[in-house]
Length: 390
Ligand code: ADP
Ligand code: MG
Image 1 (cartoon, rainbow, N blue to C red):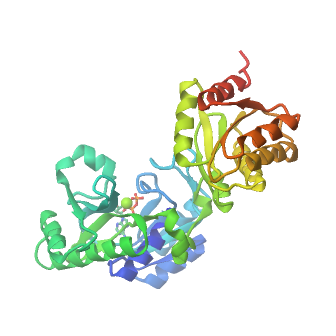
Image 2 (image 1 turned 90 degrees about the vertical axis):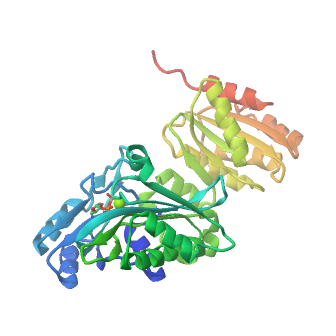
């Protein structure tokens, strides 16, 4: 789960990361008021959306008067900002962050990510920040420093110093960098983050380290024990299809094809995606109903999958271990009737109570297409798609 820049800054400030003073605004007037309350002569006004690349997309501006702050904020509210990361649909701006402008001498890059290979947190840093890490990795790969942290010791002082030196920092900046690095590491660990990125982390002319941007994303599977983080969710920034599924405790991934998929388990979902592609089709999405799905849950799954207008066929593929094929079958029949389905539905059931499940489907009298194997199910789903008008 992603959060906004201003939320990440507030969290990181709590752990001891220096961030600029700022205030949130929901209207141009409030943005102007924020600038006045902050004082000073220059402010940076920043669109709050779940995306980087806002600067390039016109979502960040240095303003030199309260009027300029207000006017720029007015152009942002309600706008869909399209950045390199949002896709063509962009993301709508409802909140604007106004902060004191920093006098930048140098921009650094700092990121904390989970390195799956070593199964540890890895710090990635560069003395050349400001641009996106992907571009940096391409244009200046030698500038990247990487450091893997042993969870038993955490980020040690000497390691943090080593990294600060590798970035070319000297004198009083080293101690500031050490404390910033350790603060980020603690925030990452203690809040079940998946990523902490500060780009840019700047050195000011006055010799201070400040985080001018901040991005954090969190492990959704850990949100149950991080209620203060779960609260920061902003559904307006998510794919509406995915929010709807999350609200019902279903795991959903939106894709670009036209076959809607209801599956149990991520592994089976991956295999099903592959089989659909192999059969010449393309999945519109997949929804993982998990274990022990009741008929009601299956009906809700249909609702969610059908909320995607691109869906022209639904494929239900269940390998029941904890699940029961008879419940799933009842759910399919119930969904078909309740939702008045007219599009083709392909069902493949296997595992616990499969005979009972198949009997329910057969005796329902509904025009369901059944299949015994995964390959068959994928082929039938692809074949069942309405033919495009020539
Ligand atoms: P994004 O990464 O989405 O483009 P950033 O927060 O990194 O947004 O802002 C883009 C650029 O704007 C930064 O690289 C920095 O040069 C400048 N900037 C951002 N905040 C400030 C600030 N408080 N003072 C001065 N410059 C800033
Ligand atoms: Mg940035």
